[in-house]
Image (cartoon, rainbow, N blue to C red; front, top):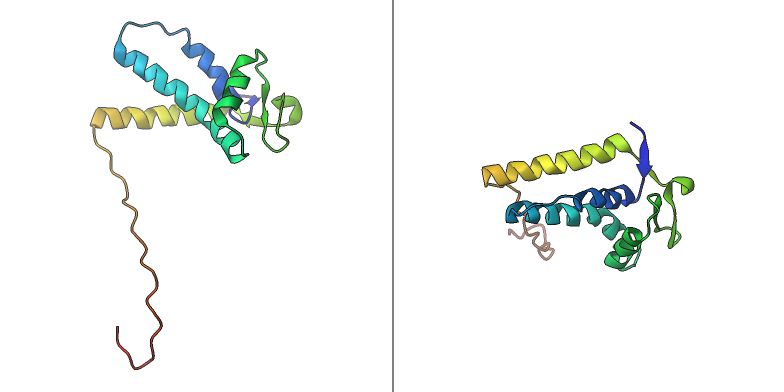
Length: 134
């Protein structure tokens, strides 16, 4: 299927397609806004992990009209992601969005979500002697 610019740039580029969606239905508008935010999140997280303000980096990438432009977190600069070798397989990128949409759809239609509750780890008890029972 090919490659796309990595580092979350392909997701940010996909947001432009959402801007074409016009509807008077509040639920559809809400869904589009949720999807828009979700598509920004990989780049936002990469920027935060690099010590940058995620929303600033996302806005800068969206503002520029170059579809291959992204943020190279290792060097702290905006670059042509494909030329720099920062790429993702299109199939993996597409499958990630499809699987996330499928999971969200299941949650919405079943109106139920089962998750593991994290168990609180108790501190180790004080050391005892061999003849002491705890």
